[in-house]
Image 1 (tube, rainbow, N blue to C red):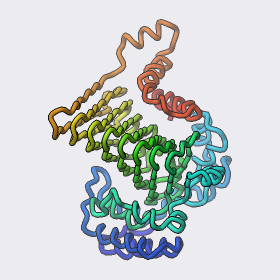
Image 2: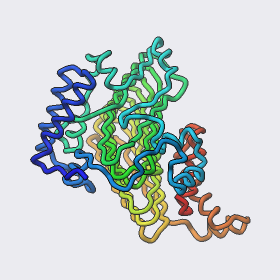
Image 3: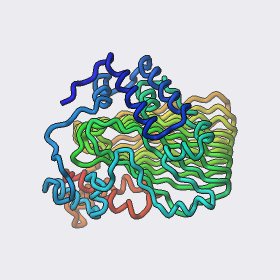
Image 4: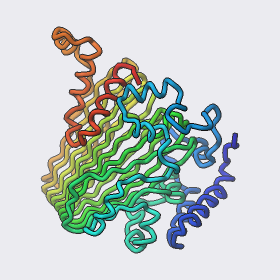
Length: 446
């Protein structure tokens, strides 16, 4: 077992990672300088995390060995019987089971994306691993990289800045409307790993694209950190839809960081389906919305076991007629705790914003807290919020059971009906698995 790093040791460890990444990626000197600025910021920045303390963060950096895991998992047959049984109950295909088991990719920073989109590059759609984009489009990356973040905001942003690895660069040229969703898949395979992919999205004027991001970890992984950073830049009239499907196991801490500049008349819809939040999930995306721009932030949360989920969302309506919606639905079970925070700031005339939070408590020990924030700096903004926290009503169960459903089936039906309105934009191929996971979680089959 590798000893936990002390604060005195950490600088040299991060320096080693920086030098290794710079050498491996053959990256330009200016990017390596950015990494070292992240290191300098790390030493002074606050941690500002409700769950991960500095000692835990240093463990992620150290990547200690974890005992008790099988050394060789080369096929699905090598998985413990209970793990295979769970995958079979979920109805997941054999190909996808290999991804979940960590058998289909070789690196923890690998990105899987459809090769046929290379043909679309001729039309103006560019999707590249971030390291490759850094070589092909250095000036574009230099202009946008960390433009929406400050490395010194927290130790997590500083650490990401220093050791970011993987991620993608997505560019859609002016007027191009991509008729199919792009699928990306992030997979953690190594225990005690800080995985830090960086994503940059640039949507040209009047372009349109839908990006689906899948995040998971093998069932056998223990104690890891996913620390991704997404920067989105939507030019005038662009339409971008970002759908994030999270199914992290209970041993993974997730810290997604998303920020977007939404241009005039642009439209950005960000939907996160958090079926597996991991041990803890803390996020606070931020959006700046120009004249007649629109942002919609949707969150679907399934809280289980003793998981801790704290999801925010800040919108600055900076241009006349800008609009924003922050909506979430949570099903909270066992001893899990879910906190939702929304903040909308109206800075221009004729702006509109709404925050809504609905939660269904499935246990006496489940906890839900919601904190809406509305700030108007003009006299004609329309800002509103609503929240509802409750339990399944006995009369609803009685009615469904009187129609021949078991209590288990009736409960599943009520929960799925509660969440269904938020699933309207999810591709059909994902809905079957999402509904199955919800069914199993509600009845204790996960």
